[in-house]
Length: 523
Image (cartoon, rainbow, N blue to C red):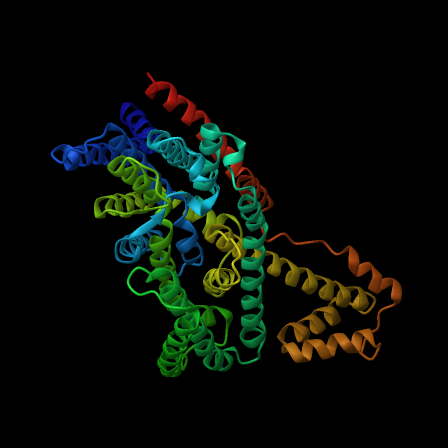
């Protein structure tokens, strides 16, 4: 009896022990940053308690980016079972760190997205307090969003922080409201474009492969084309966004290099497909396996590009604090020292490993069911949308694009399922007077037909040329068919609500933090 009670206590405390480990590891990382940054500047004559505190906040922000934002890159791959959760974390941690360190950039804008006017900031001390407040507020909001399982934009979090702290420091006139208007527009633009592109790719896959009688033969023809398009998109994306620190080029050159890569990938994949598809069964599960490896590569490439770009959300304000303290002034751009970039890279990887699984499961499993084909469509949408939006000058969020792609795939499936349900009800109502056997026979014939044959059968029904006929009243009753929900509405509403309040919430937190810091620092 006593042993059983002890085991029950052990089971009950297992979750709390894991949480304590995560909290302890996080605190150890932040304390290590404090010791490292203090020793780094101790003998240089530029020792500053503000810089040490800023470095600690930067590390905290980096961990929250890893916990929340990285899930969008690997979540669909995990949800589709293309890679395990552990494998995804390892891939993302390596690629995020590599992206941050190799291609993370040498210089960063001190005022994120130009949303406030630095000329209205009184002095370097005010600027340092502003950046500290913005960084801490963004990190706190990301922490809250991660705790409730809502993937939000880290860029919007830091933008809201800068806006709120800037207004607290210099009043409403400091804000660039035109720029804020474009950021608000991105709340709609990003998910809509991402969802539309993901849905279009999935529909293309269905129509060109899974709706065919011989799916394997269709896959043998179409998969190399689709994978080569993915290679084209990701090559262009990485050249423009991921390797801009190493080599900066224009869109046309990046597109041309991407096209060359795509042609090479097409030749390789086409040869691999010939051998891989010989013994496959003619079923959807077989087709799904063909997208597994491309999907893993997509997750890795998205993580690399994310590390190269979004690490600036953690280290950008910290670099601005460092520059203001060292040069005793406010500059429009600031260099990023290696030690600051290391804080960002390590913080993102640690946050992903410790707290990332929660959001990865939310993105990959709790919004809608994903398989490899659907996840592939989402990855394609993420890459293509960023490329198109950057060329058109549209402000978009990688988080909103990825999650919007998941919504797009889910709502497309709902639409297709609903239409299919209407068709089957059409058949059942028509055959109702003839017996269940005739109903089952016709439905079986319809389900096994190709897309062209299905269209022909439906056309015959509408034209009253089929072996059965429906009255006008029976056809109208199809509008009352039940609507099958394949997107979890509670998750949808929670995420959209979190998106809408990200900027105002982080702005409010930043203003409160700024006033607190100023109250402490002023004599």
